[in-house]
Length: 222
Image 1 (cartoon, rainbow, N blue to C red):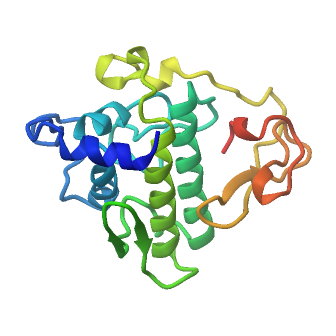
Image 2: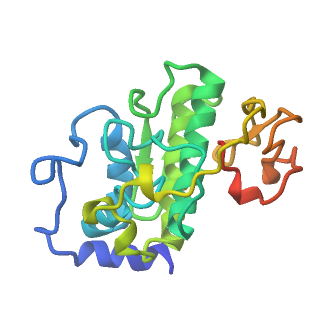
């Protein structure tokens, strides 16, 4: 579905259809940290109820707690196409921290952007922590257009889904070395991969090259 359709939906949405930290303690405060910037991007294209259905969904979509953008889960498979999209967003943000250091976390760093009803432009200096985080957010928000209507209520934390027990883990067998991660590609499509050839999930990244291993979209240690 085209983004224009979502814009029209947003304009006609019920103004009372809102989920915030004030009426739901699971949501992060809109004024805290940098979640406000992601939600501003998101809410310009989609309805508040669509944000509700994305928040705390599956194993990777805006995990509950204080790390909704960098993710709290690792080593698990996405549950469906929407969760896969969120998995890619989490991987983009993990590369940001890998490339720019632990102080460059998506929940803590603010960036600059210009937005209207049809476009989003990140305006920080190229090759900076701020610009990379913004590009990850922008790519995720625009990409939600392809998966926004996917919704399985049994995968939503608000309905009792718990990622720790509900997600499918892929753990290295005993004796296997832990993954040694690196990143490949350019933002916003930069992704982690396991460069340890002796490990279980060796290599990958695909669109940014490197490759090897099995399914590109199932890089479960990243």
